[in-house]
Length: 239
Image 1: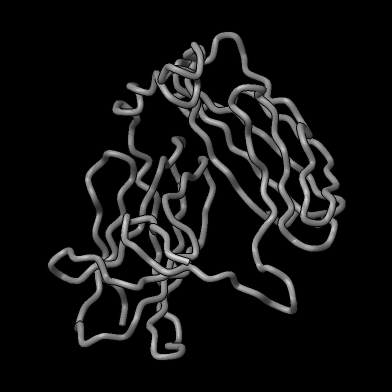
Image 2: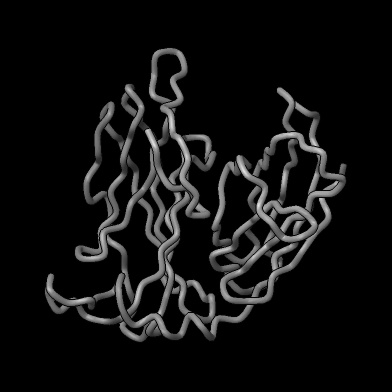
């Protein structure tokens, strides 16, 4: 099946099947019109003792509300409207919603991050509403400049591999941060795998991303880190 990846390149996609199951995920999803959160389970077994958390942050990265709910999801099913997100009346025009789904041991199973505006939805024939318009202030969002630590891994199946830890030590949200593996001329390395990308990190939050690329004759790989509209930072990848 063909598709488009993060970098708008045409790629082929295949289902990853493991032990007779489609190896995908469970995740929390936010509905902009009803302000509710639902949990989707793509596994072929029911999931129990899950905890869904929804936190709201204002434009200055201050947490303004938080709500949790215990969740059970049927096999290959959905638990609808497990909680309703609370929005303070004095919230900034642009604000953020961080969803987290955890198992009974506190392990994070999935994260979703949304940005929302106070604009009202004016109907299906308009480009209005909290998910579509009113985001001009994002151009003014200050950089968090998350710290990046790169660790080279053992080569596997003829591919080079690195673990990239991105940690936000600031008091601001690190918004829409992209990782891009390139050569020394800035050209993206084709067929590079990223375990995640375009991530947003809350203050104090960290995430480790696996980057895997075909082995080539290149003497040096570079990692470009773009945080929103801020200047790109460049790192040399360890060999």
